[in-house]
Length: 83
Image (cartoon, rainbow, N blue to C red; front, top):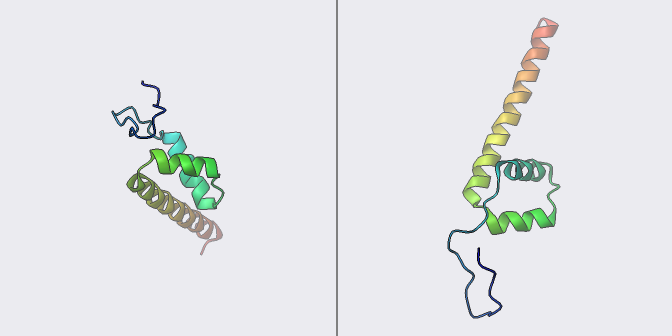
């Protein structure tokens, strides 16, 4: 991996050495965004390293899982009460 150049006229090296956001970082980002508590440091990391489509898909999946779990809990409670 090359050290970044101090020459501002040179563009940054985009040779494929860019770091990708890992699965755990993606999950924590989506969870924090859902709660509205994302730190500015993590938000900056996400905008620099992540792709919008991945975050959108993860957000949709997390929302569907949340709705499904609420539905399941309600169904279990109603079944337990005999209604």
